[in-house]
Picture 1 (cartoon, rainbow, N blue to C red):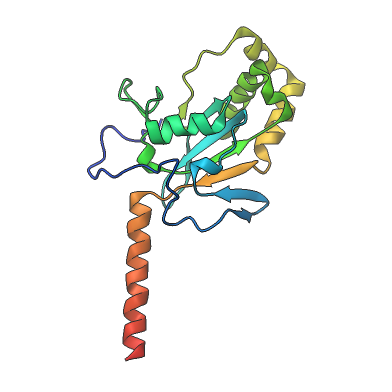
Picture 2 (picture 1 turned 90 degrees about the vertical axis):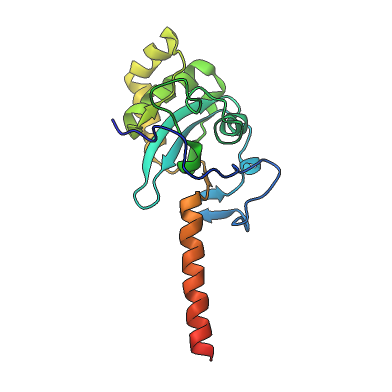
Length: 193
């Protein structure tokens, strides 16, 4: 099992807030058929399965979870930082500063809590995240997740294009972009003189 972080970051910086658009946010765009946004306020308030990605150069699925209200759940993880996986109550925790993207999958059946919980179990098998949701899964959801027709349908959903994606800038990513901009400026100044 890979561990995301064992403690606090050496450099503290403010998380993205709901009210302030990120400095790198220009507009929502469509990329490969997926609506990509850069602010949490653009995430819909719908039931969904989500996967949080970490890693700057090599992306990996850090965490898979469910939310009855996805925007509220993402806010709990990334802004309020009071979810069970982001607090320091366990041996391993999710460090929001290192999350680079959140993909979401919506489905009409996710309005039913049992279907949503069962789909999360299938998503664990599809994505093999570093961390899994710690919520209690009901017996009904466990039974449904084992049903071959449901498992096949949900596997196809998760293997397909996500319903949307929230892209976040990490501090390390911001430093890389700043360095690249400085190099471009230096070349322009050198070439322009």
